[in-house]
Image 1 (tube, rainbow, N blue to C red):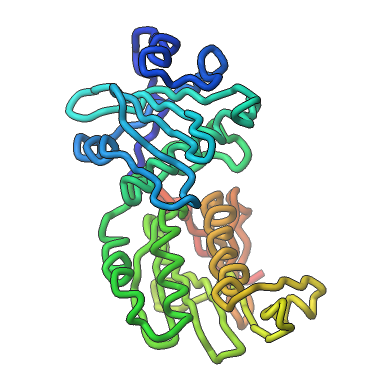
Image 2: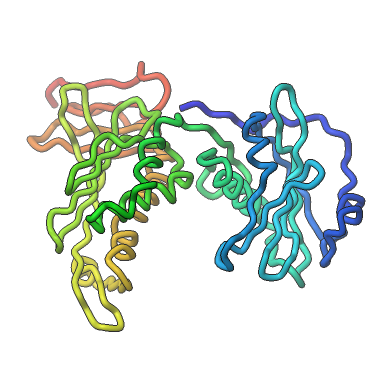
Length: 345
């Protein structure tokens, strides 16, 4: 996985933020009521041209206008016409860099949380990612919002899904349309890029990229009452071992709460959805995204237990001790420390 860390600090002259705000009449409590969040994020000249075009909200639900004014990306909240974020862009070599960010900290106009500057900058960068069509960022630590970098996944990982999304209305299967829509709309949310491997009438198979061992996720429509998402690790001999599994068993409930999952209802975790697509998103798609971002992205090792008749696999953040019949594989980087222990106990 190619990564571009943003740890390097640019040597910049102090910038007159108040003068810029006054000169461009950005007002509404922004002057002297803001905080500056340092950034150092590289973009190419082609990506700079895309950002310079900006984005104007077509619908009320879009909420944001993004414009480019005097080397600054200006984020305006359309419901109140309040300028909330300013991201400054400077020339650097053959490309450009986003060097710092201003957030509106006036409590009368914006609910800025001064204790979590990384959360605000992460949201703003995600909006930039949507404009660039997949330029991603990832948190370095689960709880430290300030520690993050971004990387550019292979464009081939999304090209096929993007082409399919253009003819989404012609796909008859609602399950197929829901899976396609999920990957087309949320691909920039994945901390690990993916590639579509195969699609049939009842299944979707994708492979997570940039890992030492192939890990694939299969979306399966067994019947109208049984949908499954199975995550597997594929070893050299072709053996597939399950890593995680999510199941959705739709049940028509009541007119005002049409659908729920029977499996979760049996466990006392009733979740009601207005449509099957929403139920699939809660039980399969959203959980898979949470598993990738919250579990797989933080794990460094995969442990395969081969001591029993039925093999099993698990993820680990730290390398476990060697045990008989256990194989430990590094998910990223060098695999020299990976070892297969086969001697008898």
